[in-house]
Image (spheres, rainbow, N blue to C red):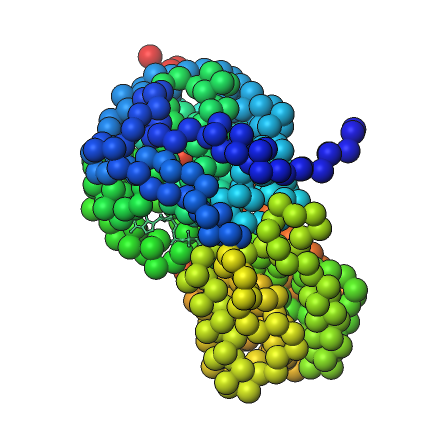
Length: 499
Ligand code: NAD
């Protein structure tokens, strides 16, 4: 296999790419302006400049998008699974041809370094490939009832039109992680990307079109008034499913809205991941894992390690070693060569990271590096390490969503488990130990939907991604992913030998 060439970016290349991104809504297979010609602007967080002006959907546009999804539902559901799968597989192939473009586009709208954007194109693409393969493996069962008087048939059916809402932090992967299983299952969709990073989804639709997607199967609405536009779609009795990835407070609101129509919901919500390092851990590997689990996506990942919980005997050494690594980071625009830390998404994100750091320092934590916003264009926060974080600090309770590594220590295994589970979230946990039995105990004791045992990055399209507690409901990816978009039907027929 040939090596992936480095992505290059020049002003001209950026302008040409941005010009290829549609600036309208995609409804019933057509690119259309928003009702009343409303527009919204998309910014590059590393400079603050406007990079694109696109359609800003209103309630009327949302209704039109749902009409189109409803109209296309029956014919898409009866399209052969192989044909549905092939649309996804061709989209995967087209994405490989355009991976440099998608990586650059994501860096421009979201800020992450190009190498990480390329990683997201690979990760996001895998959902298209995985679910193209799953489309043809939707099966049921047939059996004799226990009384012997009948035959039980269990079959799987698409749930119906779905509304998909995605966040800004993984602009491509969060879209493919929902669109691919929905389409594979035979559902049509309306997707609403985050207003901060809608461009990757718009460009993805051009690939789906090229891959032969029929009109109405995927409809895209971009809007600056998410709540207002989404509520009537969720309230519409023709909608059968809501899949949301975003913050827990918004997810809670959407679950309430979904209750009226008793909608199927999938909720991928916030996290507060513990990263536990035992005194028998391979410290080199734990430090590598810590850097990846914390600073990937500039700390803006639901799976980001939020609380480093390190055995008291090695806490100082661990803190020293991660601090050395953090001091070597290169901060800048994600398009620049060698940059490892880009900007945060906006001013609010910078203010939040800083407030959490200042609160922890005020309560007695020690600052090892960083600790303030950078004085430059864009929304940058210094990569930061704090240690000796005291119980009760806000940073132990809230999602940091920024490049801040916060360390606290523990005395024994029970103490580590108590601290790790002391949160309303339960998305992922990371544990470093060389003791296999202890690792297995931690798998059973940590209240999370996922775990990295001696690894700091675990996401994979073939695995069921999701959380427990207030981190969400349902799973995306893996064998489980397609079932979020299928409903089970049981049929009883008479014993065919009974005459
Ligand atoms: P957010 O909740 O602010 O927004 C997510 C999406 O919901 C966006 O598209 C936004 O426009 C939309 N939205 C906001 N208010 C809405 C409303 N009232 N009605 C309908 N839609 C509404 O989250 P964010 O800041 O975009 O993303 C960061 C959050 O997402 C973090 O909490 C992170 O942990 C979480 N996240 C979770 C996962 C996961 O798989 N568990 C993955 C990525 C991000």
